Amino acid sequence: MSSEAVGRYMPPVVTLDDLTAMMAEDEHHRYEISPEGVLSIMPPPGYAHAIIATRLMVWFAQGGVPAERVAQTVGLRIPGRDGSVGGRIPDLVVWSKAQADGVWLPVADVLLVVEIISPGSEGIDTVTKRNEYAAAGIGQYWVVDQDAAQTVTMHHLDGDNYTVRATMPLAWVLNTSPTEHDLD
Image (cartoon, rainbow, N blue to C red; front, side, top):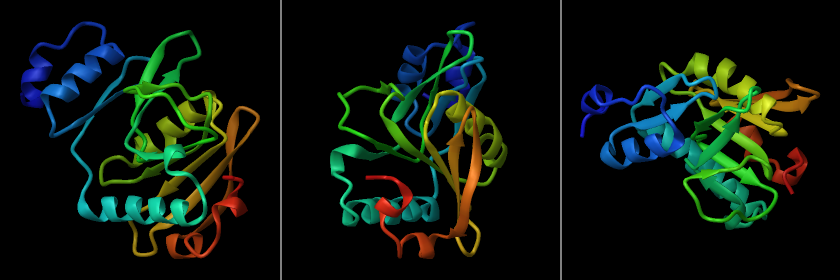
């Protein structure tokens, strides 16, 4: 089913179950929803995006983060301030402990969320998701630009908002250890 066909049959209020059903019918797009009910439909990431995610996954593994504590493109339940629930699919998630299987996992044990910016996703990744992840209490949020240096901006939760702890090329990050970034 195409995203156009999914849109024709869109329910008036979209739930996480609806998103799961839409993704099952349309393997060419990722569907996310903010806690306020704003639907985002994204094409699958490109090759450069996938290579950055793979490099980070290998770095986590080589740095001692167990495989069951890090995952790519897993759905997270993002609580809203008014009791509503949204669903985001970060590019990478690191947890403090292994999680039970599920499509939309809770954020309680999330240590880090990584978003790799794709063309057209800059605003959502650098503003909207940053605010949602901070409100959800996720300790760290990293954004990776797909510029020549593959610049990583590391945000750490300070109260209810993120502050930038460091900005550096991905190559520099890969020459450190996850423990140097409080990911042990």
